Length: 284
Ligand code: CAA
Ligand code: NAD
Image (cartoon, rainbow, N blue to C red):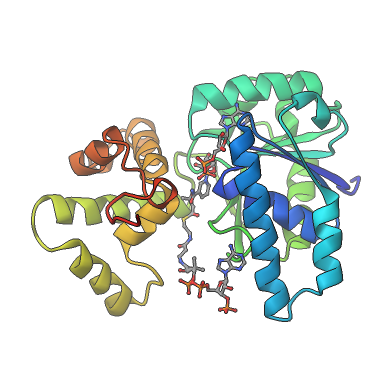
């Protein structure tokens, strides 16, 4: 199994920027690609300040921070990903959009490259069918924020090879993450359990059982969650939460996964959470 030396991350939003940071911190040469140049500017700022937090806590030297930043390059040109050993896709949670990207990545990257998706819920088996190398397609699901959260969930598609699985696990372990492995069914392990809880918190709010503050305080102080479910939904992005609920609903075929109408309405109104300044809460 060849060691991964260069990483490409596609999508420079909250997840892609954090994954690119992990690569650069752990000695890989990293290309971070986004079609939106403003997203790349935001990503560079957030990576720089996140690395500084590790320096302030004595977990990273200033020299290592500088070296990590030197290893990271941003681009909007997919041709720059030609030499990557390992690609992690972290673009919008849409099967159609991801498949189009996988078709392009399959054409451009070297034939030995592994194509991983950070999808929260979408079938890896189906994404793999967009490529000529389904044995080298895998789910590598980081948690938000990737530099801090200790878990990576690995999802093998129907055709993912053992070699691809072992290379992905080795990369996650190089990032000092604990790995869990899921079968390829909608939502995998974490979101199959987390998203219905978040959706239920919206239903609790929608049906007037309690205020948003009491729902969040209940789960924070009552069950020791670091964030309440509505606060967490704003942190993840309500658009991402809704996309995941729709995948669970369609993929598992049970009405218990129907997205709460209030969640749908917030997304329709563009209230997608912290990233736009307003979601369940107003951050402006
Ligand atoms: N980079 C570096 N360090 C960071 C950071 C970042 N981006 N964000 C937070 N930190 C560090 C802080 O420096 C701090 O470190 P110390 O405790 O050593 O001082 C620590 O993390 C806590 O940060 P803060 O004090 O600033 O804030 P906080 O206590 O509110 O913690 C949090 C922030 C880590 C995000 C915490 O609130 C938390 O764990 N929330 C829940 C997150 C969660 O559940 N994530 C999973 C979402 S589901 C998912 O990701 C899957 C999906 O597909 C949707
Ligand atoms: P985000 O909206 O913050 O970022 C997505 C980025 O992808 C944007 O900057 C956008 O410009 C870029 N993009 C869209 N289409 C592109 C394309 N074709 N080529 C290049 N760049 C493109 O989203 P996010 O929250 O970082 O989520 C990204 C992925 O990670 C999704 O699949 C999501 O389900 C998954 N995920 C999200 C979280 C979370 O908490 N937000 C956690 C784990 C996994």
